[in-house]
Amino acid sequence: MGCSFRITPGVASDGATSGPPGEGVPDAAIDAGPVLPGLCDPATGLLVCFTFDAPTLTNPLANEGSAAVSAQHSGVTRIARGSGGAASVDTSSQIRIPPGPMVTGVAAMEVWVKIDLAPPVGSRVGITDADATSSAMSFFYYDGSPSRQLRFELGQQMFLDRVLTLGTWYYLAQVCYNNVLTAYIDGVVLGTRAGCTPGNATPYGLQLGQNNTQTGGDQGMTGAIDGVRMWTTPRTPQQICEAAGLSGC
Image (cartoon, rainbow, N blue to C red; front, side):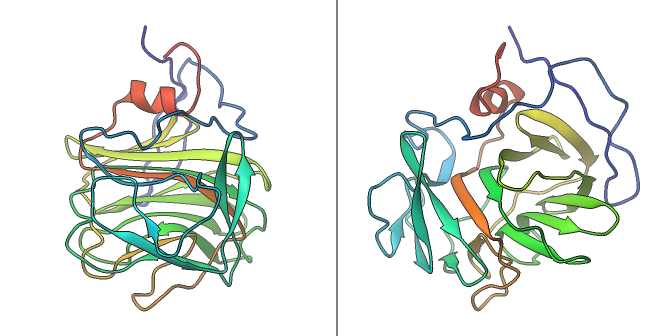
C-alpha cells in the first residue's frame, strides 16, 4: 500500500501556490527522528551519506556513500541520537566537502535537522549548500518576517512557508524528477514547481550546517544535523515516506 500524503499549501519562488490541501496523514511527529538501520548501506545512486554514528568523528570524516570524498570539520560535537549520533553545530562550526568532480548529478537530497536558534529577523541559516551555481543544491531556513520559509533548491529555488519549532527534529527531502522539483517535510509533500536540474558541488564544494561561500562558510545554523544523503537517482514518494518513519508506506 502506498503512502497517503497531505499537500500543504505554500508559496513558490515565482509566487505560485503549491496546490490545494488534500486528504492524507498529518505531519510526522519526529522528536528524536527515526534512526534507520543501514542508512548508508550500498544502494544504487547513493552518492553522499553521513550518519555521524561512529563514536568519534574522525577528521576528515569519510563519506559513507559511493563518492570518494570526505568532509573536513571544525567546531563540531557528536551528540547521541537514538542508537546513533548526530553532528551538533553552531555559527562557528564548519563541515565542508572541498570542490571536486565527484559530487555531481544529484537528483535527490535528504537531511534530518534540528534548529535550536532561529535565524535573525530578515536573515537565514544554511542547512546544506553548494553555493550559487547553475546547478546549485541546498536547504535553507529563512526568517523573512513576518513569514518563515524553507528554501529547497536543485538547479532552481523554491521558497515555501513553514515555521520550524526550535529544538525539534525535521526530515527534509527534495527530488528533481521529470523536470519537477518536489519538496517534502517529514515525508509529506510541501510543494512542487516545474523546472529543475540535478545539482552538483563541483565548483565550490559542499557545506553542511552553513551557507557555502566558496572559501569556507557563513550564515551557520545552531542546532544539529544528521542523515545527510544525496542521490543520483530520484527517490520515490514511498521511499521518502519510509525514511520519515510514517506508517502505511
